[in-house]
Image: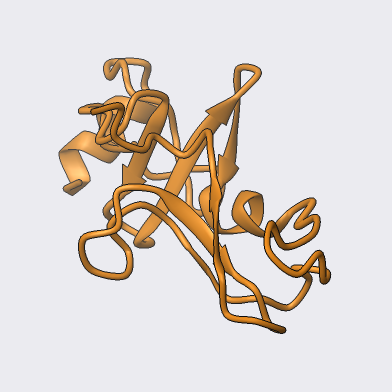
Length: 111
């Protein structure tokens, strides 16, 4: 968002929230319900219980265990929806067997 948008956001003229990282006004178009994009720092934020969190920090939290081999998903590579091409769901790749463990709550397609 440009300088005018940042200024309006700080003066209360914008309806979109401010970026928790850099203070710029977040994109108010809601790419995914409850999420916002920061043009300034290139981060995606998701609203959880009324508070904004960086989506990258949310996707690795509470990794759990693999649906197939029950190994820990800690250290597995994780992807947000559409981050790895055409994946409509967020998922964590099991570091042991490679299974893609789908994570819900990241705005995935319902269809």
